[in-house]
Amino acid sequence: MCGIVGYIGDKEAYPIIIKGLHRLEYRGYDSAGVALLNGSLNVYKCKGKVSDLETFAKEKDKKGNIGIGHTRWATHGEPNDVNAHPHCSQSGDIVLIHNGIIENYAPIKQELKKRSYVFKSETDTEVLVNLIEDIKKNESVSLFEAVRIALNQVVGAYAIVVFEKSNPDELIAAKKGSPLVIGVGEKEFFIGSDATPIVEYTKNVIYLEDEEIAVLKRSGEIKIKTIKNKAKTPYIEELEMKLDTLEKGGFPHFMLKEIYEQPRSIKDSMRGRLNATKGTVNLGGIADYEKAFVNAKRIIIIGCGTSWHAGLVAEYLFEDLARIPVEVEYASEFRYRNPVIHEDDVVIAISQSGETADTLAAIELAKSKGATIIGICNVVGSSIPRATHAGSYTHAGPEIGVASTKAFTAQITILTLMALQIAQAKGTLSRTKFHELINELNVIPEKVQAVLERNKEIEAIAKIYKDARNALYLGRGYTFPVALEGALKLKEISYIHAEGYPAAEMKHGPIALIDENMPVFVIATQGTSYEKVVSNIQEVKARKGKIIAVVTEGDTVVKGLADYTIEVPQADEHLVPLIAVIPLQLLSYHVAVMRGCNVDQPRNLAKSVTVE
Ligand code: M6R
Image 1 (cartoon, helix red, strand yellow):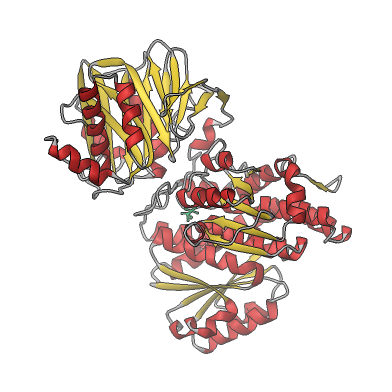
Image 2: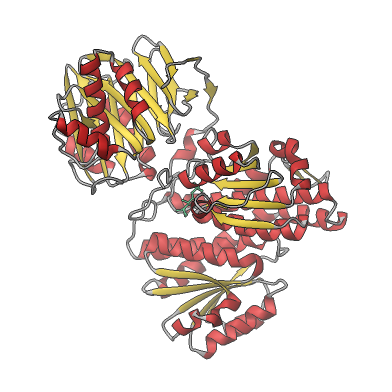
């Protein structure tokens, strides 16, 4: 996690760095800092958000056209001023920012202590900067070479940017396991954990590969080597990102903006892939791997959090439409379980950020066993799409709110297209059903829009339940993953304890929790399990629980039972998750706002979990 920014060129570095840190704040926000060189090296850092850093640095000397900045999500050491980055070496000559974890920091620290290094912070980063200094001094090498040697000694993940007081003309950046993008301007370079701090200055970027180090010179020269000292030719790519996607655009929070973007983002996910007029589905990214799907005896889906929930929806889709057995795994469990993986397995890795450490490690494991790996990611150029054999981007646009919303519906859209394409290739779906589903999918954006128009009603329900201490979410079949997602949304941004369950499982335990104070959110849309869900609602009512149900327009049965209902347009049950999740996203949003929570940056969380 953590966001890192760097700049070298003719401009003042501070405004570029601060703006960049605001853009990267989704990655961590417990402390922040900058280092600027202008004859003297000025390091300002403090506990809190980037805005606290701005206040702290207000009256200070912020001049300099080389600098680095960091916004932190604590791993080693509590969030405080001392543990905040940048960290300086003992002599004060070298300054460094880091995103990742140096796993073997303890023995290195012991060694350095024996050599009289004294540590101010509890961080692994301060160990790394002192290791670099120690190597530089003892081996009389350049900073670049000292960084390279040091990185051969560390175990773990890192994206670092480092420079030294005595050399205002060079920034050094390196990465392994954590992302790093270099923006290439006219005799200037920008560095970011992703492209968001860079996009308004240049469209030319280099995505650094693992174990590469770059030296960026004020003259405009860039050199890249591997940590094993092999020269690499920099590969410059053009960024597709649009600046306005990074602003709130009049909405009070990114989360609300992103919820409202869903009619558009779902359309963007389908663009060029679904042609309802011609009756075709074509995900170009998996074209060469269609055979692997058709011959697969099994699909394994891996992901974390919301992406794992999207995987659960896909389990129903692939089994139902393409008749391929599916297992959905938490990447964090899968990677350590010694799982049985065959060469004819297809593994689908789902990730919004494309950087989730557990998902990446699970991919590497499955790849080493010969499986075909397909990625579904949102962030273009991120690590997961690079690690997979093939895949499809979701094209939902940058998602900045820590709570995932539009990425979830975009992932389900892609997974639906994928299941349809494979079902067609396998011949497991009738032409009539295939056409029916693609026609329905084509109009889902309008149906999502119709749900958004119920925002006021949903806000009124949120007001009634905002002080609940617990909540239960129930769904069945295709809506069970939606129940899980609804519960996750509520707990992560409003800190209300919430559980998602398959509706029928309720009577095997959670029913004991139900009393007159327990709100139970039930997704009771029309479909094969409708009657059964109605019976589950009766069971809750019999125990005086409060029912808030998401129902299909025109429903009368559930309306007669529930305390409150939210209507969504009728849709084929394969596609219901795409619309049934919208009221639950809005509900969580409003509850969190009413409780005074920081919706876009909930406590303890970060958008991109690049540590395990
Ligand atoms: O970037 P990823 O999709 O790999 O992230 C996975 C989870 O960390 C993420 O979905 C998380 O659970 C969100 N906070 C959910 O809103």
